[in-house]
Length: 286
Image (cartoon, rainbow, N blue to C red; front, side, top):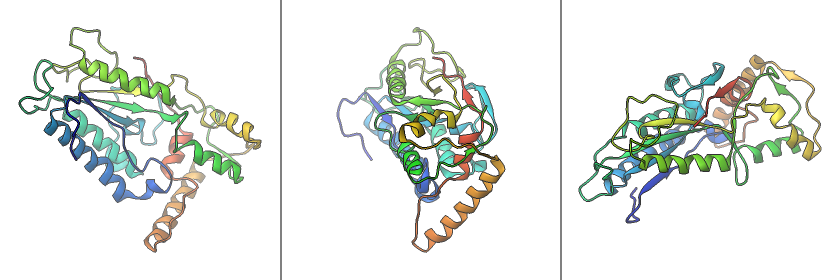
């Protein structure tokens, strides 16, 4: 991998794999793309002398099935080896790679002169994404509803999570680019540990949660979709333990069949059950 465009000022690393569906169960490919791919992006930035790198991360790096309310960037990483899915584990490792690369020295003659030839990095931890062009969550949700599979909700209806509209997520990335450029005398972005400040902007070396700032129950959030499709909203709520058990069984069946060359899109995975039904609210104030 290389950054061939001369004069590039910033790289936005938005690519990832295995966020949902059957791709989530392909552990090898998920690890290769999310971890090895990120190593390659960092190396390419340094080799090409691109001084700023913004990494699209995820809430999952701190969430592992334990309810979180009003979480901040001071929360520790959830141990990668304890995640039930490779996507969350690999994104945790990749984010740490990106942030640890902050301050890496760039070659002579590079654009990294702000004021030193060093790489400035930050991570944007996105909530679940919706909006125009989103291809992972809502197309799958709509297909499930149209097939009559939206027949239950899961867990406590008072449980709330964050979502982020794609426009807000794009805005966050643009602000990150801007504040990797800004000198330290500029106004600091609140949130997150500040001990790793470099000679770059105030966002250098930092991670930020990004959401709409309007936590909502996942199934209430989807009520508008079911209404628009003419699908009856479920009246029955399944307990979390039952859905975890079902998801675990589905994953085992998928692994067995995929080894035989037969793949299918699982109804739900354990990681998706946890994300759907357990509270996950974070302070995304910037």
